[in-house]
Length: 248
Image (cartoon, rainbow, N blue to C red; front, side, top):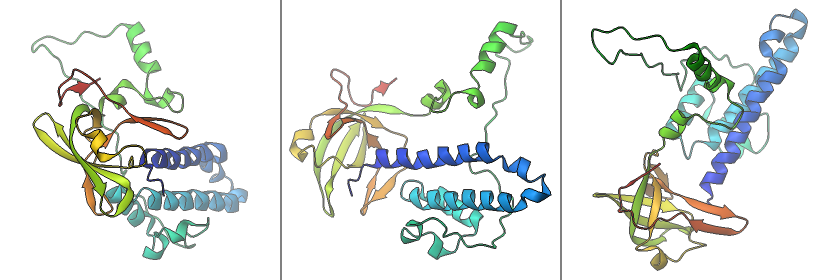
């Protein structure tokens, strides 16, 4: 009801992280080798599948295409992918057979190239290799990201040139932004904190490479950053930088 999308996604990803931890705790690959543990293995796999079904429904508003693919891989009937169906745990039908599927987010391995043609690349010192190994994503503590992960997020300076209430949602504002020479429409759940007229002329920070989503009938192409604590919210603004500028 609060339309706090960032917080909602954070909570969804807590469920994903807890499911990953459940895999480590139960070790289904070990259970599979013990004939006496097959009933336990079946329960573990059902719990994981049911958790994934619930996540599929929860992310459908923000990642509709990914949610559709997961639903197909789980072979979920349509009535198992509704919001009502996830009100309690245990809605995934028993007896369905899930086949091996392609990874939704395959790992990308970048081929190393020699920068100077005709010259062999020199081997990196052993110390540098150890430093790279220690920074591998697999060994990072939970919750940390690499610089490569952060580099994927495109942050841009944007100027609010117009703003009005959403026609069908009291908590939403529809902002028109200029990002350099490009115009963007962003729908944001900040109507409780800002009047539309107060936002015009502000210079804000835009997450520019988010996949567009439909929010109550209007397309939102990006997300503006805000800081929150308790019941307070304040947009992140900058001074002296023209719209379109990069944030790093």
